[in-house]
Image (cartoon, rainbow, N blue to C red; front, side, top):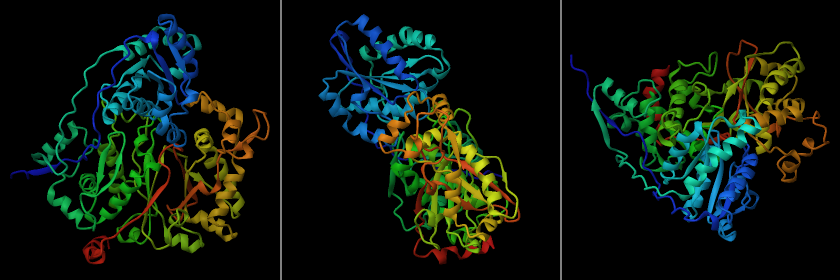
Length: 578
């Protein structure tokens, strides 16, 4: 018996980047004005004085401009303010070159690279400080942004575990020579490898041969794929009225076009059914939203996309919303969850070694799709999660957000709402406290509480709504400022000033009631950002929380657009799931 031969399509998208070489270097640093660019993390405040001291000793006429002139270059708030005006501010200060720091995590490394590239594209040479473990990520992000020969200056070792003396020694003896080398070097621009066209056949072979071909090119998640043939992709495209070439977005770090076509190709590979195509498009649209920050899913905390579905399609497509809802096994939940991760890998460009654009320190497995039990929502008289996101009951809605960890299973017992709520505060709220520093600093934290319908019935019986539960958890979950700042320091926030955040309107008065380091402050910024989804075994008194990254992967929802002939197309699919 002869094995079938498959003609497999290219699973990536067209790059939108125009390559440039790094700017000509500085011939004489003794006449140069150097700007410090910073995101105020990973002890850059300790490095900068040493850098200035050592470089001034070698180049007596050199001048430095501090980072406060240019603003914080990283984050949903600061980066949007600082980077658009960076070139103008550098010119106003008469700057000749920039030193950007510090890349020592999975999101700050791309951030410092992006800032340096803004400077390079404006004509300012740069040296980008990156810790040893993040060098490959920095280089990969520079290639994706079109500056493959960006000057990257290595800082040796793990920054947050070094003593003050060791940090100063490494800065003076290793980092400063690396900065000087990057600011004065001459390096040829690397040529980008020519890529296939979006609809190109890249491999013809047996199932095993196609899988091996894709695996060696890092186009898979390590599991076998379904070969994406033209015939299979076209069967998916029957389930949408969209143009296959429609660009749904362009996403860093690889800056590839996210199209309807690539959604279909990767959906085939993930083992999805053709009728899932409208959901796949909605997922891609959500991830392509600039406020979702898909580009930062290589962060060291190890975040994963969580897809939440609502509407009639939950039943039509056979999603599990009952016992074992987050187990692999149900095709809709499992294959669509796999698609979300695979799309981040292939189109967004989040991959582990050797690319190292995925710098999850330890990580976690992919999430399968979380489907809400809307019958249970109606039974208790609550609003659905989709309504919480601004949609109407009966609409098909996809929400995508990040999660980086789950709580233990939260068993709550008793016949009063208070008994259940206090345990939820203790375990769910307590788990979220460990990551509260980022949500408070960014003025947004969006955890998910998956609640058994059986627990919700007890709460609703006493007249509590979804918003009442959110408010109770919000008002009763707190932590000390001392603990908050310690956790922030451990992550890498070397500056964490609640008074400054309050002055900027990022936090409420509750965070600045006194200077007592042991005073209690809220863990959650606002009650309405606590997501609650009714799902899981209705016959058990269990809930489970999922902590959101709070800097990236904010809950982003899209209405699922069905084709005009959806019901006609779905007749055989409904028969299969019955």
